[in-house]
Amino acid sequence: MWTIRKCQNTNHCAYDNCTEELQNACGGAFCTEHEIAYGTKCCIRTCHNERVARTLACAGHQGAWKKYKQDHSHAAYSGVRRLLQRIEENLPWQQRTTQPAARAHDNHEDDDDPPPRAHFFGSSKFYCVETVCAPCGVVIAWTKFNKSESPTHILNFLQSIFPTRESRLSYVCIDKACRVLRTAIANGTWRTVWRDTTRFIVDAYHYRNHRLTDFLCRKWCNPAPLNGSAPNLVRIAYDKNGRPYLQRAYNTQACEQLNAWLGGFESILKQMKIGNFDWFLHAMLFYHTQQVIAKQRNQEKVEQIQQDEEEEDEEEEKGPVRHWHTVDENDEDDD
Ligand SMILES: [Zn+2]
Ligand SMILES: [Zn+2]
Ligand SMILES: [Zn+2]
Image (cartoon, rainbow, N blue to C red):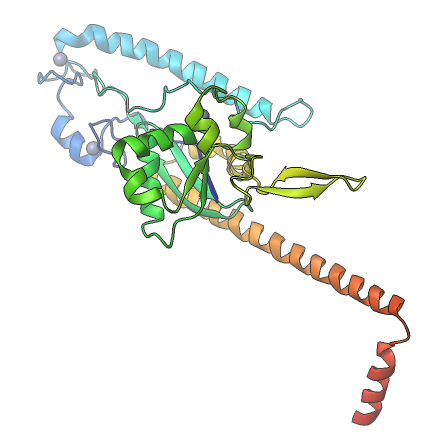
């Protein structure tokens, strides 16, 4: 089972569907190619006039340019405010819930690509980074989504990571699994790609905000169905009085936890050029994965030692088998 979630972003060329590196990372809007093509033209999409000196618009569009500059300084201010809030969120003495922000089931605002921009005054931003990780925290893949986190983008991304039937896993856990499932049904990939191998389930935290009356969501996307339909997702655990109860068998929050960790690097990442951003993020995720695997190895060792000790205890309880006699005898033989 994999969980998939978004975080962080960086700037790129403003031109339609171009995600190239900015030629000028400090305030430029275009990549080198589009800077050459449009560097002296008015930045209003539909306008082909030459710019007025020291502005980004022609004489007729100076009003739009001035308004952009005003809005932009406000945006910069609120960006600073957001950043401060973000840092405050992580202060240890503040009561900070580790839960991700609730996203309502009906909130489809990031499901569609936004309409094309009316102007190219400033650079564009990637909408988000998506990470796919295993419940243990090992990162499987990541990518940047340009315009939105639409179910179609998610399905394409998943298909690129799991191209063959054999590579696909039983459960993919996403906060908007039901919308991904609906999109897959609508575009036909449910039948041709996913149906026989994979279920899309909502992660446990976001599931609480999904509508009780959404039949498709309740039937197909429940992270821990108690009706026995997905025994791999639910296991029987025992409380301290030995009474059995049903428990989720997987950590569906692995990606949220990863994002919380990556959140600490946000202020560094958001100032990076695309190449550095990609390299840095990849290195951090690689490092994180190494750490997770090392922890797992240690855990396995501890469990092995505990198991060995338990077995020894059991044998001692059973009776007079004493290993050290055997060892001593062998040693004597060797000598
Ligand atoms: Zn470009
Ligand atoms: Zn113009
Ligand atoms: Zn739902």
